[in-house]
Amino acid sequence: MPNIYSRMKLLPKFILAILLLTAASVSIASDWYVTPSYIKNLQSGWTLYGRTKTVKPSENKIQLKKSIDETLQLKLERHALGNNKIMILAAGNTIIAEKYNVSKNISPAGNSMSKSVLSLLVGQVFCSGAISSLNDKVENYVSALKGTNWGESSIENLLTMSSGAYYAPSTLMGQKNKEMQKEMSGAIFGNTTPSISSILKKHDEKKFKPGKQFIYSNADTSALGLVLRNATNKPIHVLSQRLWNEVGANKKATWLVNSRGETMSYMGFAASPNDWILLGHYVNQRLRGDDCFADYLKAATTTQIANSAFSDNRDYGYQIWTECEVGSGAFCFVGALGQLLMIEPEKELVLYIHSTNKNWGGMNHWGTYLWAAYQNK
Image (cartoon, rainbow, N blue to C red):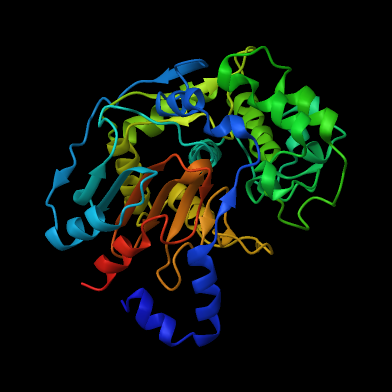
């Protein structure tokens, strides 16, 4: 397969865009996201202040191998940005470069990488038959959302973040306004919060007809979480156990819940760095299958809806970003402050980054120099 840069030579019209993308960043508006207490809470997997539910380690743990590529490791040592606290690159189930600027024992929260984990759960539940069709209306599963844009959306509309319920400014990372941000994020510090359905109903403004336009929305993922709970009559941390077993996870994972015990599905998942790598490896392996879940993954990891905004991410599948590396076929799970799991199926590459940077994003910040170096080998 041609490497990224050789393909770029064939696509000169994109070169300027790529250069801009390299320098791009996303700024987080609220200062509390970068306070020491928030960072410690993030790196604890929200356990420092929040309420969490546990997903047990796999009954059949898989041990990652390690074969460090000295060239890649040297690039990592020289070029990793200061706020990239953990960076791991794996080929298959083998770590080929890694760098830790924090303890290896932490299990950081993934922030919005959780959205992509939730998508995997949707696929499993759908393939189990508990969801009869992705074209089903959400109100068939969540009566509390009847009459809202979320209720009138199909499950697939929510997967592609096209409920059209509200417009979300990029500075609020998927929230409609600061009021909604405060209501939804209260769980991070263990505060009493309204129910998820009541927050959604309060902020539904029926901006667009469902399915017509991509708008990055935490509420769409939150509504999906309610669908899963009601379709299976199981909380999300319980549903996650099957996935975590199949991944071969070595350590427990956690989901943040609010004061009502509802899972914060849009940002609440936390896991150890090596288990994130195993998760990426699992997705690569399952994509090669020939069953319902493999078919779901193929749809989830390819573009289903265009993202018209110019940003670090490209287009969107089912709660998963697509076209994350030009010409490589990579897709990615992305979270605030620079959390990243980038997955490339053809060479079975997985790149994990845990970051704590207020201004984050851009290909170099994500460690693309490392990715490209391997592609050039």
